[in-house]
Length: 358
Image (cartoon, rainbow, N blue to C red):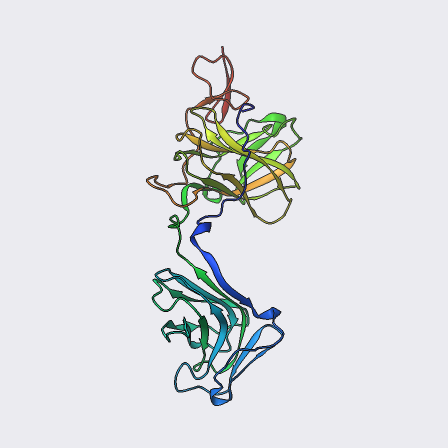
């Protein structure tokens, strides 16, 4: 284990970051006054309020665009690209709202009637505009609220270009285990300083009575076995409680070649479950017979593991997800956590049990 490679580049990977670009935006909470245009039907009005742009509709109009209010302009678009308009807003009542994005230069637009829910909290309202065919210059976004009586509040408006490189498929869970559903721990905890692992009321309890000299004293298998794809990117997500703030080392690697990626993380002690994440970009270790190790030699007390997931970032291309797989197998290890063959002499750990082979 001491020879395992330490992961050097651990920057968080933005999935499909180049697949969308912010084209235009306005934050109405930063504006001093409304200088746009509200058509004014039935006494409607638009003005800056305490939380953003307030659009008031005293009475329902005969059509959606009575009134209509400019909430963002001007900006340019690309022909045949795909866009979405994201509006952060509160609406006074549940009902129908029509959003419109178009150009003043040719009068062509794309619009949609949306069913929105009334809420005292801000929500995101989205207009999708695929394969833009209207004019590319002098565009605007219209809030057409003739069917929403009361005062809507617009906090922010964004226009995103969703084209560019094809974004990868959604993240895929490759392997996972929910320790709250397990009857017993049948894996392996190296046992330094009297450490132990067993199923408790809330999941897998890993107890460390005294601090070890290194992170892997002790180390505990919390998920195995599963296969990975070479050069794919992964993250390990562990839902856990930790007894005290300190350093934890997480490790994902293969028993077949002894190579892994690992990272020392600063975790906060808490009475609540939290997600602890190990990023593993561009996987270069062996693709078969992999495991996740919880190396808690620096965390004295009892950690509780609720759930462990290995997630392929961008989706899998042929790996079948493995759920609630038993981590019991016949692989043999020495006290350093290294895989050994049948001829190894000394203390051996197999299926969670120690014995001496002479």
